[in-house]
Image 1: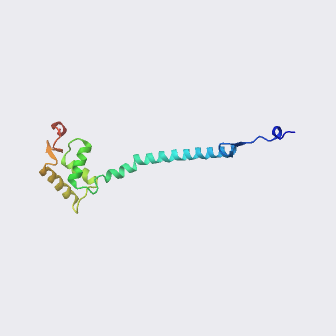
Image 2: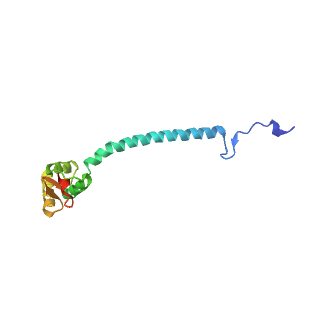
Image 3: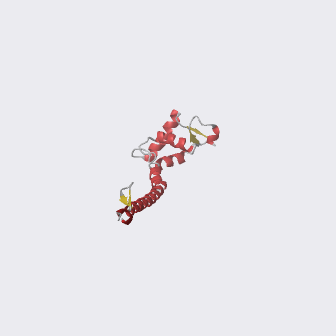
Length: 136
């Protein structure tokens, strides 16, 4: 009698060297890992769009001198703004100041205007190379 015809079916997969059941468990673990990773990425995405933006928004000018922060802000927004709006935006952005924040910011803007780093036209402050329509 031949052993070949009466032998039980071999459930081992030659490529993995493991039983079919073991491979199925690995696949299920991999799918669970993928699901958990996708959920984690969704949570990270939500955090990046809200909290991280808010924190960075309030500290975007930290450790910058007022005039450097003013120039950066003007380049970002691409439009001239009133001086009081600029002062408030720089203060909210955490610009580097000494003991007297408002005075330091105002003096920094004044120095920038005196040096020509920034200019004031039509009651708004902008960059010197901007066209007149940016100041309307």
